[in-house]
Image 1 (cartoon, rainbow, N blue to C red):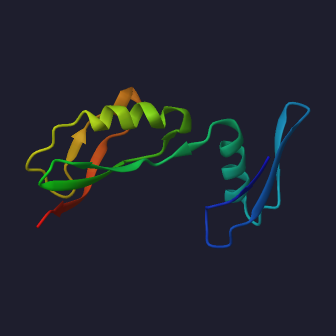
Image 2 (image 1 turned 180 degrees about the vertical axis):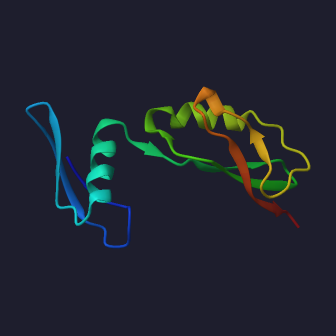
Image 3 (image 1 turned 60 degrees about the vertical axis):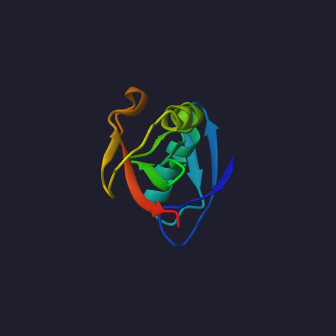
Length: 113
């Protein structure tokens, strides 16, 4: 597997492979790249950012931490069920999303004109 490390602006090209039951990472310039490569190979995670439009206001939201990539579509479906009204920047709108240990927080409030 090959990927680009996103831990810093260098963007090292990582080669990740499993050899004799061990995940090996090459191409990294620092220990963070190695750790990123191992996580990306074994259980990739992403911070989810999305939006919900109420008709008069669009709220942008994000998870407070990364969640397993395989859970992203389930998380989006849960977020889309929200009936948002009168929320402000920084408000938590879902606590412990899908029992994943992360919250969903308002990151922006865009009022339509």
